[in-house]
Amino acid sequence: MRIARVRLRELRLPLVEPFIISGGTMRERRSLLVVLEDGEGHQGVGECPPFELPFYSDETLAGARHLLQAVLIPRLVGAEVESPEAAARLLEVGVRGNRFARAALETAVWDLEADRRGAGLAQLLGERLGVTPAPAIACGVALGIPADRSLDTLRRWVADAVAQGYRRVKIKVAPGWDEPAVLAAREALEGRDLPLTVDGNGAFEWPEHEASLRALDRHGLLYIEQPLAPDELVGHARLAETLQTPVCLDETLRDARAARQVVELGGPLVWNVKVHRVGGLAEVCRIAAIAGSAGARLWAGTMPESGVGSQAAIAAAALPGFVYPSDVEPSARWFGAGHDLIELEMSKDGMMAVPEVSITRQLGPGRLEALTGPVQEFASPAR
Image (cartoon, rainbow, N blue to C red):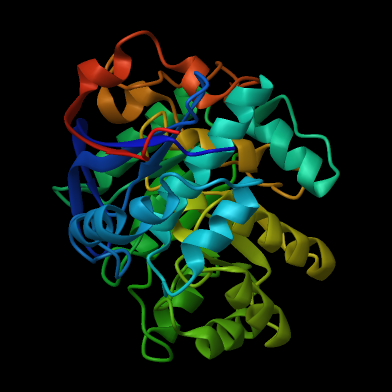
């Protein structure tokens, strides 16, 4: 595949309501889109979705934009690449971290291959791993911390999620918003056999908050996601030994190297795999292989991205090793009906179909132009 042209576009999608986690608040989905062209009429689209401030990761939207413009796009434009994996290797040379920026281009190359072959991303991943992707994935809801810190608001949100058919409920927690929030969510579930999980986004300290985490351990949670700081490998391993509830890693799982170290330390074996956080789909395949050997249970998380960026998460969630409901949700939940680039829809029983075509082929005519801002173009010399 020759990358003849790359276009960099800005995307701003206001959220229906603020999404609050332990580290910060998001009021709109600001991200960057990259559009690759091969000069033969085929395109690939990817999304770069880090937050504007470093409350989730140390990579920010401004930093990702600079690296894309100054280093990564010039490196890729005009290049001949044999595969998305080869493109990933090209983007890694001399670049530490910056996984969101690399993933934007890497997933766009996957989409370019899918567009050239008339296939979907899940089909390509299945071929690489020698597995058959599922035709649909289960969706779980991710509920932030209410702006009014009201347990009644949380109860209402949980009840609404149950009525909509979600397959799992996740609530955000933080020191001071922990066990009471879990009890309120349990009340709203009204005895339903629906998995409940919590996500600390690294807000708890070990061992200072051991008592708070032990309190969460009493309430039959499916898992406790990322309670400690991302670099707290040993703390998570010790916590996994201490609690009966499985501990799930999110921000800690930066790449396959981190996954291997977690296994060797005897750490948690429930992993939230976010495609853009780990650097792209090639890295997802490496992590899935390690998980298969170690017996780790996976599920696909989101930032959340737009309907474009979510396609990579949907493809990953369709793999057999991804056993828990994903964080992929309908577009209307985040942005309101009709406002997303690709409208994601969920059935009444909480399932979402896995596309069999590329991202490019799912975009309606003029959709990118209508919903994205200024465009920067990078083109290789004509041959």
